[in-house]
Image (cartoon, rainbow, N blue to C red; front, side, top):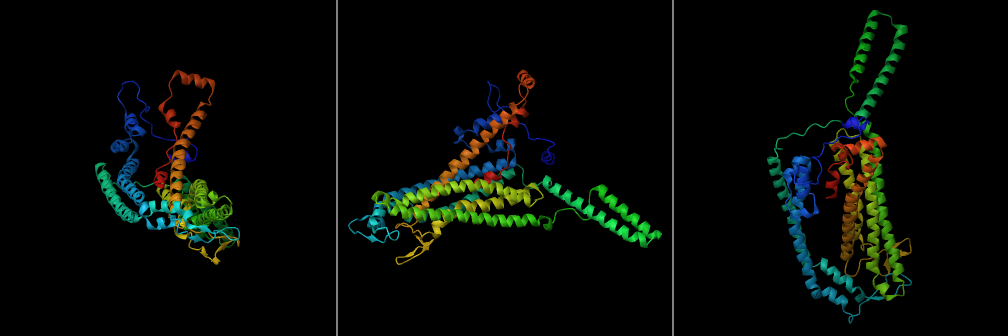
Length: 475
């Protein structure tokens, strides 16, 4: 069926739903209505998931995904509670933190070197009091305990999920179930057919050349008989649709795709690093310009303003590149011509994860491990483009900037990408599909009024299921 859909013989194929998801009157609820009322609503967030019913309706793969999601969300509750306690400890002890107290003490009057050359003036350390106090909220002795706790939490979560998965496999009778052999993908079959055709044409040409060479020289009966046998073998091979030795595509057939894959991935890595470097240059230039400002309030908020605006730019770049990388990963995987859908998914996951991981975490890794390491010292600063000094960490350290960066990127991605894209765009697609279905003649409309639309027409307007790969990738 997938081959026929790929060739355009059929438009779509899907199992039908059990009627509408809204309950009409006092009739007995079907499985779809039960799932909607007890599970697929925001109002049912506090209830246990009906995993067995999900598996019955959607199948084992989707049942296991939501079982995993339930275990993960449930075990995040103790982790978040410990995190809140650690944060509250930071708030409680912020007035006892000696480094931030010394930095905020105006009587000590620590004078710091200028933030830029030529026009910037010396400044007092007490002006960075706010960032030092905020840094203690996220970097205090309790955070060491939290790091150890999270290491143990991860191990506990994995073991707990293994136990849950094995119990579900047993209750759903999946133990000892062998993976069904995947059918070849339509594109793989097409390329293989083209290769077979090329091999046949090549063999025919070789046969013609041999025939031309043999005919003038040898006329013996045994040669003619041998030639007839060879022709019969060739014809039988053509008729059965199998050429001599061509049963699958080799690495030589995929070599152009592999070369394009490697070069494209390297190019996209370079693009990600270029985007990060562009934001670094923006931070350096804007920091220098704000430090030159005569307004003392602007000067005092240089770091927070530059960090916040740079992170928002980073977020926009990440969201745009994420969409581009997702489409490019699919295109690159198609070039590899994987044999089955499972192979296609494995190759796609590897590429998409690599590209999206680099895209999302490159700016965070820069702030965490590289920022301020190469700034130099007074009298021997490191410069970018011969005019701008490499940026330094705040006096209280780079951790507060890392917190701002993480919070804006994580919250921004969750709100924009995982909610707007996952909820808004599917609804828009559904509206477009329904609108296209309305573009019919007047006679057909009157016919539709006379009889209610069939379930397959209603289901056709729904957004097609794209598999669980994007869901796991989001997690």
